Structures are given as C-alpha cells and as structure tokens.
Image (cartoon, rainbow, N blue to C red):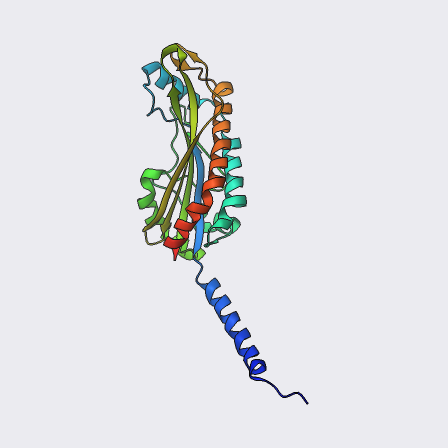
Amino acid sequence: MTQPTNANYLRPFVAALFVAFFLFGNAQKKKVAVVSFFVDKTIDLSEVDASADFIAQNTSLSDNPSFNLSKPLSDFYDAFFSNYVSKFEFELIPEEKVLKLPEYQDYEAQYGGSKNIGGQDTYEQIDGYKVVQNYGKRTEVKKLKPIADALGADAIMFIKLMYKFKRTGIGSLGYYSIQAIVSIDLFSKDNKSIFQFNELAGSKKKAMMIGGIPVMTPEEIQPMCESATEELIKDMNKKITRLSKKANKKLK
C-alpha cells in the first residue's frame, strides 16, 4: 500500500488557500456605476476667433433638428463598453441594473441638460441615461450617493462627448476642422475625485469657408464630427491601457 506523503496532505490545504485568495481578490474589486453618457451638440468656439455671425450660425446649427450626433455618440458608447471597460480592474455594475433602478429614474440633475431658445435639447444622450454637466458634478455626486448605495457602488462615472472647432492656416488659405473630446470622470460615492481624463482627436474631414466662416450646415459639419469621433476611438484604443493602469492604482 502506498503511504500518503506530506505533499498529499498539503494538497487540500493548498487548494483551499488558492480558493481563499481567489475569493478575497474578487471581493476587493471596486464596483462602479456609469450614471451619465451624453454628447453636447453646441460646438466649442474657444480656439477660434469667432465673429458675431459665426457665433449666431453655431447656435443655429445646434438648434437644427437635422444636426444629429446620435451616431458618433453610439459609436463611442459601443467602443467604451466593448473595448475599454475590460481594461479596468473594477467591476462595472450592469447597465440594466442602473437604468432600471427607480431611484435613478426619478433622479433629476440640478446641473443637467439645457435647452435652446426654441425649447429643444442642446444634447443627445444614450437612452435611459441622465445628463450631468461637468461643472455640476461635485453637487451631483452628493445627490447620487443614495443611488450609489442602492446599487452597491463604490464609485460613479460620468462620460461626456463634445466637439470644438479648430482653425489651421492663414487667411483664405486656412480651413476648419473639428476635434472630438471625451471627458471620463470617476468619483467615489463620498465625493472624492479618483480620476479625471480628457482625450481629443481631430477630424480628417475639413470644412469649406465662406467669408472666413465654415459652411455651417448639418450636411457639412455632422460628417466632420463623425470623422473626429472615429479618430478619437482609434486614439483611445492606443491609450486605454495606460489610462487603466493609472486608474487601477487609484482604485485600490
């Protein structure tokens, strides 16, 4: 008969220890809820010398129902959940659980979506998500704490897509392009900033100019926004690993 060795005695102990470490490791994962995912339809003019006519046309563009940014928003949303989330070590609370929570559905942001003069929304959001503006996040995190507690979330994430004009060249030889910017902010439910990340990329498509102003029609500007978003997704694909490493250190 073969006598049991010390190794045989140790196997159950080692197996139990491995399971304990595995369960302990999983238990330490922070839980995160995405609570805002939207795009701002008003294009930023801060980097161009905008005339009164340019400002008026830009406002008119954002007011135009034909100016639809749902496609680039949807493209970035798909990239975020399909390609980026898996790079982080936190556990993402299922979207359906967040959006169907009665407390979340009843929540109204103090610094939420805005409307234009005609009463139309100046933003588009992923269905079910709330709009929370960057300048109001500190206030909103306090209001969202009961929702985070109900979800069992340690932290909450805000995602905003936006665009701005960029001019290159001089005089009649210049042209306009559009840059897509994403803002991804993560706060603990106790209102501590974990990380704030911004990335931008420029469109390959350029805008024609008339009188020093780009042609401000949905047919001209919308493809530029879509082009800029495509480039942004490509850039994010390259940088998400570096971002996730920084975020993972802060989440521990």
